[in-house]
Structures are given as C-alpha cells and as structure tokens.
Length: 80
Ligand SMILES: [Zn+2]
Image (cartoon, rainbow, N blue to C red; front, side, top):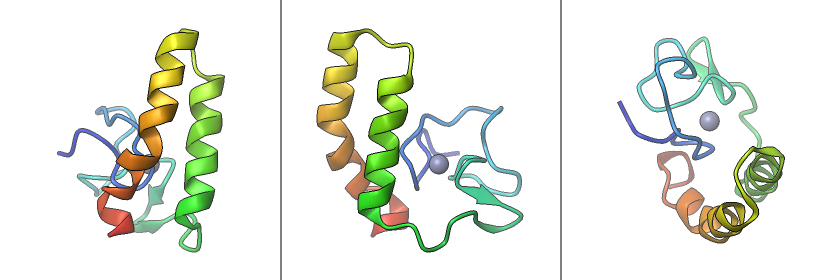
C-alpha cells in the first residue's frame, strides 16, 4: 500500500483506502475508476489546499504543508 493517495496526496489509512485499490483514497477512486476522471492537476491542487486550510493543523504546520503540497502532488502516479 502507498503512504499517500497517488491522486490527491492525502495520507492513506485502512479507513480511507478505496476498495480494490492500493494507491488511491475513497474520495478519488471508486468501483475501479476515478470519481472525477477529468479533474486537472491545477484543480486538484486548489482542492488540496482548501482541504489543508479546513483541517485541524496549526497555522505553522498548514503553512509548511501548503508550501510543499504542489511539489508533492506533481510526483504522484496519477499526474505522471
Ligand atoms: Zn485521493
């Protein structure tokens, strides 16, 4: 199993791993396919940053996560 969803970069756990997948979360992937097959890297980035902002981490941690997120996203299997 991958550590991070290879589509959105969210940390993968047993709880959010999509059924039948070893690398995507259940917000990205369902029944053997992407939930939003046409989403672009830019759209995913905007969504991920919003998710980070809405999360419970502190301001400083959010700052660092947001700074590294675009780089991390680009390395994921879905975008290569
Ligand atoms: Zn995902």
